[in-house]
Amino acid sequence: MTSGMYLTQGLHRSVRATPQDPMTIRGGHVHTFTEVADRVARLAGAFQSLGAGEGDRIAMLSLNSDRYHEYLLATPWAGAVLNPINIRWSAAEIAYSLRDSDTRMLLIDDTFLPLLPELRSNASDLATVIHCGDGATPDGTLGYEDLVAAADPVPDAHRSGSDLAGIFYTGGTSGHPKGVMLSHDNLMTSALGSLASGFFLTSGGPLLHAAPMFHLADLAIWLAQVLHGGTHVFIPAFRPDWVLEAIQQHRITDLLLVPTMVQMLVDQPSLSGYDTSSLQMVMYGGSPISAALLERAAERLPTASFVQAYGMTEVSPVATLLSPQDHHDPALRRSGGQAAPHSEVRIVGDDDAELARGEVGEITVRGGHVMAGYWGKPEETAAALRGGWMHTGDAGYMDERGYVFVVDRLKDMIVSGGENVYSVEVENALARHPAVATCAVIGVPDDRWGERVHAVVVLAAGQQGPKEIGPEEIGPEEMALHDELREFCKSLIGTYKIPRSFDVVDELPMSAAGKVLKRELRAKYWTGSDRSVG
Image (cartoon, rainbow, N blue to C red; front, top):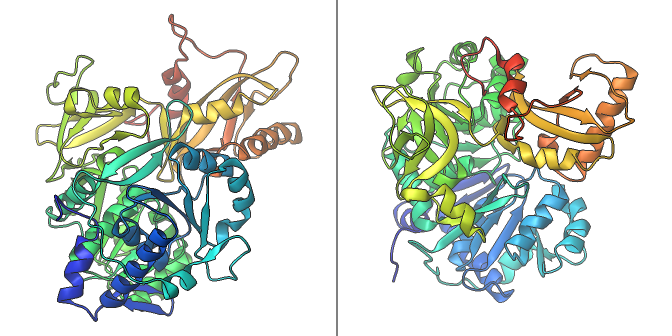
């Protein structure tokens, strides 16, 4: 007996309504709803036979595929909890998340097999590894397709309602990733509320998974499509030519990208050689889209409407939506839209009292989509959810029509290419290098990434370095330090978090309370912009 909504709900419905329609397409692999349900039930049976019990965590480290889709359904079917791993993390970050969540079962594809020895040595409780790639099954791992073929199907455990659906790790203000606990009701509320907007997905249209599936943004649109009963098409990762080929071949109607991907897609020289006339909706998030890019995208993808979603992992993840119609109003394009149908949004001051329209304060969110809390971090949970509202750490204002404009970040978070980077994680890594006395990390404008990670470094006594080490042409001395610091960071943090540019200064600007004044560091880069974040 279920006590609420559940992630596998849409699959059960579609098996009865459209059993022979295609649910998943990956290359030449096509599975109907009936076939997917059978494979999911067998994979769940394999999980249980390997010791996955009620509430146990199962992790996935993989590029996009139909097997990722099956994992997302089979894990709750088995009564277990999802733990999708950020594919851009270093082995050290991945191992931390496995230890922190006590995850003992991992699915891994061919791309990430080289990380496995280090993961095993640093996450000693990892008992079972399932190889879900297309290559030969390595020693010490179990073959995904062998398990599916051999296992008996099991009934759906119907984990539902307030039961934990997944732990989704995000950057941490303390320097370590923190696990966001989302229930079945959290995720379903966000998906159903987004669909209720009327413009979140095209009814009956194929959805292309080009953005990484570990990310809550893609999972949100994945779940909405499962509820819709539509077809999912998978490419391993975003590449403009792969996206265009998939749109043409499978008559894709819906696509989720971050603005950086939109730019790369519309700037692809071969775009005009593809038939993209099926494309009806491009959803983007992570940061607003520039007017120039939107105009270029509308010109090169003339059949597509654009939708922006603003939110975060902690709200499963949609808080506000900017509709296709809103995109025609230049004044609204810099906003994140209005509260989604399932979401309540307000702007508050330091005392948590709601501010007048137009006043800048912290954006807070309330509703059934707000997380249960941070895994193992009761104090951080209480601080984030005080008063029953999720405090986003974003500063913004709301206009008279309820449109939310993000103007800054309270948490020193950088959004680069749609990925969240917490500055303290990068600072902690850089500070371990012997040449660095202290440092501060900020986001600065970048034409390609929206923001790039930029480090301001004070060198240790006796160390010499150039005053500026930018991403442009630099001399051999500057390049040597640039490369040394970047290489040092690689073993500690994900590649996307590593600074792309540096300043070397004699001292950092400090407040009377001894805090680094990052607003002063950002000022010279953002002067003339209408916002201090990308």
